[in-house]
Image (cartoon, rainbow, N blue to C red; front, side, top):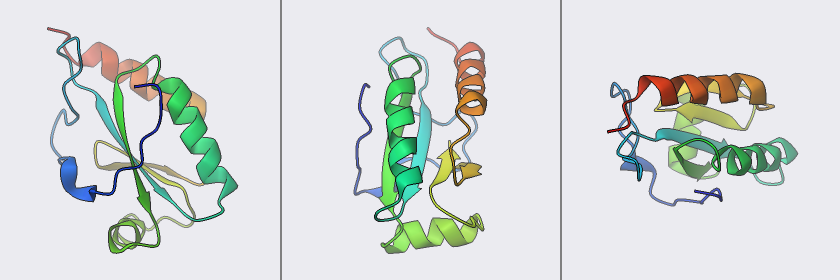
Length: 118
């Protein structure tokens, strides 16, 4: 995946499932990334750009959810995110606000090593 896709259907990822993610071409599992964005948010645009770059090197599926809809508001409240973007990895809180790129890249690299490529 080389681009971040905006996905209107929020419920496609399994929340809290051990291992989560979607199958990749190599047979391993991709990390399911959920980005809750706000309109006219420069940090959200920056996060989407960073995810698009990282998606070239790491298996991931990215779901972009608007904070203006019920699912986005519910996620912001559930995770008590003080600001957008809210980033979830496999349904678990990762960050809100400016995306910590190095931390995310380390987490994706670790997930790639842990998950089998059968």
